[in-house]
Amino acid sequence: MSPFTVRLNLHGDLDFFVRLESRGQRIERSLREKTSVKDVIESCGVPHPEVDLILISGRPVDFHYTLGTDADIELYPVGAEIPEFKDERLQAAVTSCFVADGHLGKLVRNLRLLGFDVAYDPRADDPQLLRVMESENRALLTRDRRLLMHAVVKTGYYPRSQNADKQTVEVTRRFNLLDSIAPFTRCIRCNGLLRNVSKAEIVERLEPLTNIYYEQFQRCADCEQIYWPGSHFSKLQERLEKIRLDSDS
Image (cartoon, rainbow, N blue to C red; front, side, top):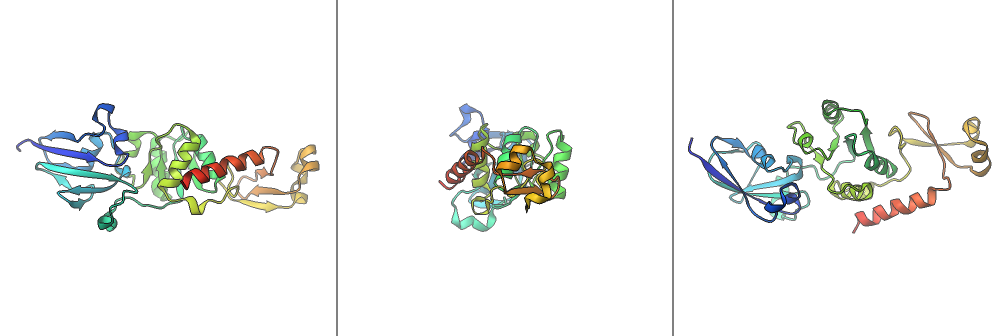
């Protein structure tokens, strides 16, 4: 077939994924065969879970739309305010269950501290992550662009920052988690739910000084890890409150 050209205009922060010299500019691709809009978008470096709305000639299309002639494509991220197309969005705006890749351990800890369900195995390979994502209907968190581009990924996010607290703010904003924050309700070690437990039930497992100075305890329903508000607790509360406030700003 005759060659044709598609021009992509990236809105919001989607140009984070393209080369510096291409940011703020339309990106052109010359094609010689029919191609899905998903493949064209990802050839520019933008993972499809980051794109919430695709307009071609002012008309919304999905990722399966096939390009075969010249086209101008407008791409919008999650959160873009375009009321007339509120029913044509491609991404889930809200979710509270995640699976994270092995490089995001500090983010996982933060999210669990805030009470969110995050599956995490630092040894998991890509196929395992994708299986957990699919079978448990979780959103994928990763800084591996290629992993996020897998066709089976329905919902996912690429944290922009490399700082765990800033990543936590990003995820909280992206998935509208602010009203669901429930600090210190989930085990940071295994992701299980925490239950209040009497001191008498676990006294034999306590160190002598812990036994003397603390009276309130929680225990993980899955791995039985014991938690109590130790000397570091107030600083941890302050840090989580800052994350909450930053997420709301």
